[in-house]
Image 1 (tube, rainbow, N blue to C red):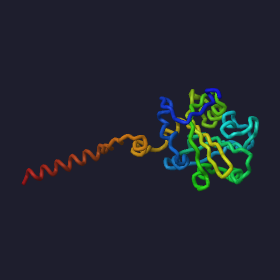
Image 2: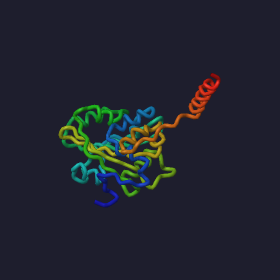
Image 3: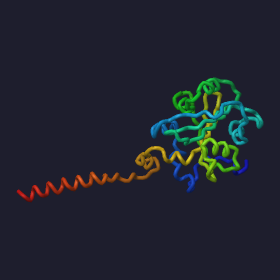
Length: 223
């Protein structure tokens, strides 16, 4: 497979992906993480039969040139598009996934994948998408980055299995994702094996503590 199509099973540390590492590596629900930082909505961009990319067909064990069900959505946090999600579901074998996918509408696929105990998630794979990859252009359009498109976009993908069926979900992150809400630095530091830095009291709190200390000192001096 050509280098620009290869997805890696380990996340390389680069200046471009450094700000996104805690988003890329987290195996919990992306939907829930965005919801925790603001108002979450889903915008369906496409849901129809289509042709998977060459690397998607290979990952799903499909015969090249075989069509599959494709769903593309934009995930929004506080009315800002922050993630482009691209899902591929093979037409064979048949099963309940197609019915569930058809009924999702403006709901997140992640809410279904993480709520149903029958789903299993495979290993995650990572990639810096550039203009040579088939998903780069639709991701740039979906994320509304056409005026000043970046050279690369951070992306990850996972297999989700349900019985004999398998769905491949790719998620491409916008730089706007980093602006969502306040990040829990203590949680991320613990996950990365670092010690979180202690929070410094606000200036008003420091001044108040200083005045209280001075009052206690003056009171003792007058005794």
